[in-house]
Structures are given as structure tokens and as C-alpha cells.
Length: 115
Image (cartoon, rainbow, N blue to C red; front, side, top):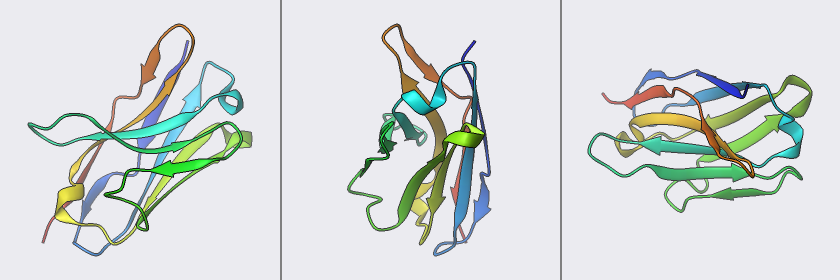
């Protein structure tokens, strides 16, 4: 069974940094694209970043230059390093992947950027 467990969220001041982790299990992690999504209250869920099985990176325009997605295939773990955080980054952040059969989501971790 595919399972994702996110961690690393919390409260941070504007300009601060957080590192999110997603521990994956139940599938061949290294063979799949992995994504970070986020959803703010009252907003549509938004794709933040993608890393392919080959390590190719892509980002939403709103986070380019500030966030870095990475993966450690030996640890079956996905990361999102978030720097220069802004209040508009406040959201629940979700780990995600797509297979031929369905998409899989973690439970999410709350990130709040506030003074």
C-alpha cells in the first residue's frame, strides 16, 4: 500500500526557511515522478514543484528561486527546501505521485508564514 508521511511544517516568520520531508513507502519510489502541492484556505490546490525519476526539476512561477525540490531514493524520501518565505506561502503542503492506476496523496503538513 502506497503511503506518504509529511513532516517539517510549522510557524515561521517572513523571510525564514523550512524544510519539508515526505517519507514514502509501499511502491517503487525511485521509478516515479514526485510532486509537492499546496492548498490555502478557500483556494484551489496548486502544483508547487515536480521532480522526475531522472531528477529533472520544475517549479511554479510563484516559488522559482526560493524553493528547491529534491529526493533521496536510498531513503525513499522527498524534500522541499523553502527559503525566503512569504505570507502567501501559507498553506497545507501535500506530497503526491501519479501511477497508471491512480494518484496518491499524503495527509499534508501545515506551513504558516506570519509575523
